[in-house]
Image (cartoon, rainbow, N blue to C red; front, side, top):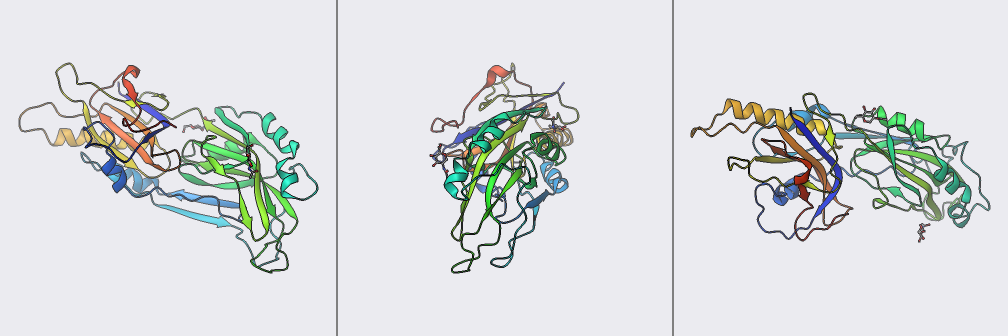
Length: 349
Ligand SMILES: *[C@@H]1O[C@H](CO)[C@@H](O)[C@H](O)[C@H]1NC(C)=O
Ligand SMILES: *[C@@H]1O[C@H](CO)[C@@H](O)[C@H](O)[C@H]1NC(C)=O
């Protein structure tokens, strides 16, 4: 039986590293890989759809035997972009608590936002990763957002479930302008506010550490965030032919040589789209086929892929995810070998 070992955690590596041993993180490959797409929710929109081309990502994942950097093809469509200065924008959420006076300070200190966020039920199948932050996430693998009329965690979860690659979501209140503030002396530099309830989808992990978008100014109007909660799906679907995922947190497999003295590490890959164990599985399967089709001349056993370990890799800090990293092995290794936390100069986040 083959095992899938998955940890969508955050291992960080620093840049200054000695030449890596084969099994160590291949920093050269990581740096050569395309930068992950880092869309954030579009300012002034009430919804945004991001679609990745999973078919082409899977096709690229199957290039065998070499370290392959895969570019994720994505398209993003924003709905209801900002209009001309002083034109009205979408109405706020009918189920958002009111606050007064209509100032940034009153929004930030409104205890009703906090109380709704703190008391929101955790949707079935999800874990709550943080509660009641005053910032939204800039996480890995942006997958768009929608606005809701109430702070409905179950509804946001159901929408996430319907999006391929959606691993986590962020639900929060946002103070937004009721009309477009325009720029300069527009005549409506600091209009009355509305409150949106935004449900944002991510193909990576959301945490307090990457909840670091505190809003911004639009002309003299201050956009703010309150009651921001994060949730992550507890289930990672096992790809066809693989057993269930085992979660390692922020540690990666560091396998010893096998009983015959062979190195069981085959290769590593990095992908830049939403976290998806199926990409590693496709690479693992393609590697096995390649090994069967290309037997070694000296009779050493074919390097058939039996096992992989995958995680989101960060360089230097928790704010620069480089992509989904996969390491492929000829043998399944038990949890006690999940000991690698990056390089000696790295830190965990
Ligand atoms: C979580 O992810 C799994 C696997 O991708 C998916 O089948 C499921 O619908 C998601 N949601 C829940 C609540 O498990
Ligand atoms: C967010 O909360 C932190 C900690 O409570 C606080 O220091 C910070 O000023 C707040 N930021 C905004 C924009 O309200």
